[in-house]
Image 1 (spheres, rainbow, N blue to C red):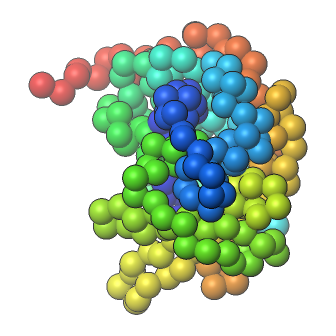
Image 2 (cartoon, one colour):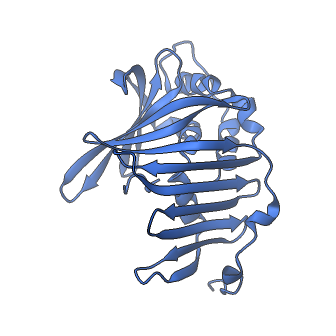
Image 3 (cartoon, rainbow, N blue to C red):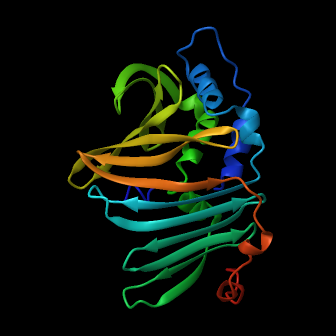
Length: 257
């Protein structure tokens, strides 16, 4: 579960990164530049991504026996505005957000008391990334210099091309369909006190949302044990600015000196 809540800034930041990267595609097809360029095109193209001004998703995270554990709502809008609501089934609810300037979170403790706090923008970004895996994909063009093509492999039942991404302290492999170039998922290694653990993330259930073709199911597989996040709603419809206003409890918290 830690991996599920382990990696997000808003999708708007991501699309700006994708559009800001002028990917030069060489003649050979198996390079990071060529694969990522074709992958962006496979889900609808750069222009379709650039048109996104707001983003909303709703979904439920379930265990391997289909038991719901977390209901998730996430909304983002231009200017870094974010509102996320996590409802832990039978336990309680936490929220986080930003009006574009001030980032905050609301949590509950063991005594069922609600706590409010200001958080840094990088902490907010990580919270968004834990939910929105489309962001992980759209961030990849900004990391081309740290990638290399490492061949082909069968992944989640499909022949895929592999891109190895090495950054300081981490290493992961991105998989892309050999036939369609759609992103199929990611493999990472998590270092634990009991040794290294390999975690596969699968992108499934592809559906059209406006002009984009997006996955609506993310499955986390660790040693055969799976947890799934199924999204029943993804929308790019405009959102009212008022929904991102700071909660009253946050307004009364003084900014750190």
